[in-house]
Length: 141
Image 1 (cartoon, helix red, strand yellow):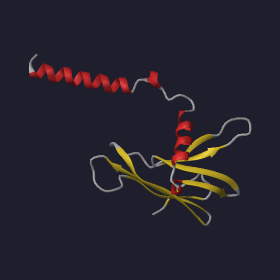
Image 2 (cartoon, helix red, strand yellow):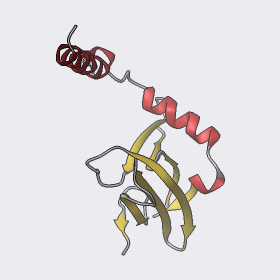
Image 3 (cartoon, helix red, strand yellow):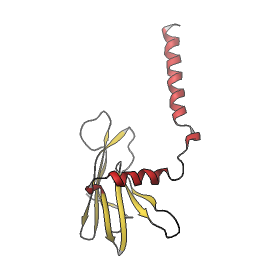
Image 4 (cartoon, one colour):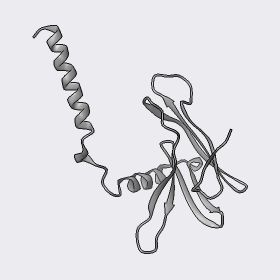
């Protein structure tokens, strides 16, 4: 096989593998996020979890992979998790470099930082966010 032909075959094989990885047949099953967040809650460091009262309501928050999730308990069903905060999208691959939460008077502050892969330092996206109720977040300057 000639080098140009080998290069085309390699490119096509790579594209096929990437498309197979994005196959809709392997859709996220219901409950997968909840199971992952429950696991993250068990393994979370103290600075990655908040349990307390915000705006007069009991709230449980956990930060996982630079996203904040809020517990939704229902009397008739299992606990579910709602993603309430995620950093703005970045056009290239990133990884979570830093994440923490802290309780402060009148609310919770989350510090999230995603670093672009191949880049040094932090952070390509993220920042410091504050919430008084665990649902609505404001990015701090």
